[in-house]
Structures are given as C-alpha cells and as structure tokens.
Length: 129
Image 1 (tube, rainbow, N blue to C red):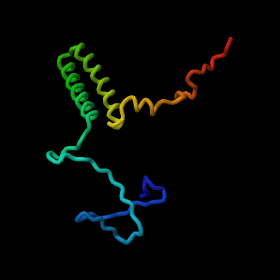
Image 2: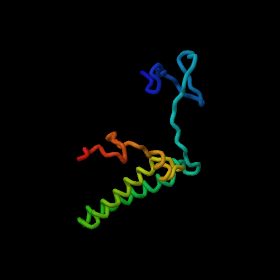
Image 3: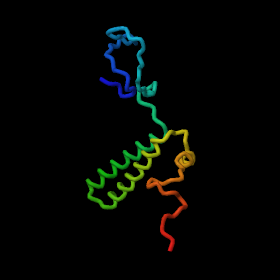
Image 4: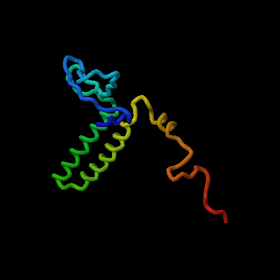
C-alpha cells in the first residue's frame, strides 16, 4: 500500500459519494492524485489533437491495407502496407510531443554536444599516424 509518487506516503481507503471523498478517520492532510481526460460535450468522446488524429488515421489505413494484402495475397499491397506502417510509427512519435512545439523547437531542445556513446561531436578519438 505504498504510494508510488511519495516514498513517505501511504494510500488510504475512501468511499466516494455526492462529489465528496469520505475517509474512515480524520487525516491531517490528504493529497489527491488523479488523471483527467478532456471530453467532447456533444458526443462524450475524448478530445484529441491534430497529431493524434493523423496517427490514428495512419493506423487504420495500415490495418486495412494489411488485411486486404493478406486476403488477396498481393505482394505489392503488402509492401504498401509496410510503408504505411512506417508512416504510422512516425506519426505516433510525432503525436508523443506536445502540439505547441514544432519540429524545429524539438531539435533545439534535443540538440546536445554528446552522442549516446559519450563521444564529442567534431572530435575524433582515432590515433593519429
């Protein structure tokens, strides 16, 4: 029953009713952590941004192309489905970044002087002969 967000905290049991949380005893302070999803007022569906919409559309196109290529046993359709899969994965990666950040902003944020293997850019570690 340890709280994953605070090492010193504990999860407490509660009952919910009338937009109020009821606890078995009086606690001096309680932190409530929740995750909300913005919903459309008309249909009650979750609101998504443009990048997420494009990723979902690419996934639907990929699955439909893959089904058709398997059904018809067509190699060209299968290659097209694989290309659409790559498009879907790219759009998923794009959808993971906030919509207000452009690709140029992300490049500026992620621009670092070191590679993953800890070697500096522009500096060669090869022995000089």
